[in-house]
Every structure is written in C-alpha cells, then in structure tokens.
Length: 132
Picture 1 (cartoon, rainbow, N blue to C red):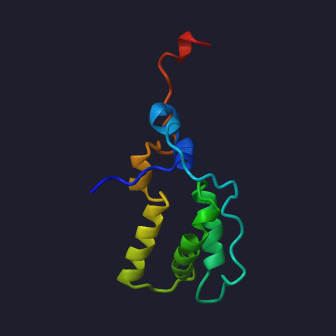
Picture 2 (cartoon, one colour):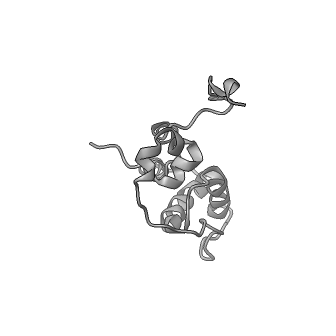
C-alpha cells in the first residue's frame, strides 16, 4: 500500500519542504487560507465529555490543520473528549481516534514519514560555519 501524501502545509511545518524541495515545489494543492478555527457551536462540553477542550489541544498540537479538516476534527474531538473527561472508551473508539489522528498527521509515525525531528534534536547544517 502506498504511503499517504504529505500535505504541503505539514511539509512546511516539519521542514520537509526544504529537504525535498523539488517534490513540494511541483505539487499543487487546494489552497485553504482559513485555519481550523474555534470549535463548532454544537460541540458542547459536559461532565462526561470534553470535546471543546480536545479541539483546543488538537488545534495547538497540529498546526497544519485548516478549515477543510473541521468535520474530521469534530468527530475525533467527540471521542477524545470522552477520554479527557475520564470516561472509558472501547477498542473501536480507540482505533477510530488513532486512524483520525494518523490521517491528520498527528501521530509519531505519521510525523516521522514527513521527517519531523524530535524535540531538542537540532539538525544543524555542518556547512553553516563556512557561510555566515
């Protein structure tokens, strides 16, 4: 099975657009200028579910998401909100969350495919000292 395409926005955040410049320069994608924004009005927090809190966390931790991801984000936040509220979820819900996060490029394996570096791992150019 082929590896999913890395969106240009994600490549820009992770630095892959510079590492594989030709690959991403030639790519044309639909331009969505709006970010993911605030959660929809119908997504409500309660004692047993915190989807709005999950939305805020995902928006901060996955900065390449845009308005075209809102429906996928709302569905995954509904499940993540249950976890945040301390509710038990089943295996199917866990698998669903993992699949959604992977599709959005928000898992370690999805990030590694785009070449994201772990926190604190400085990828310094050895030639930089010669070109100051």
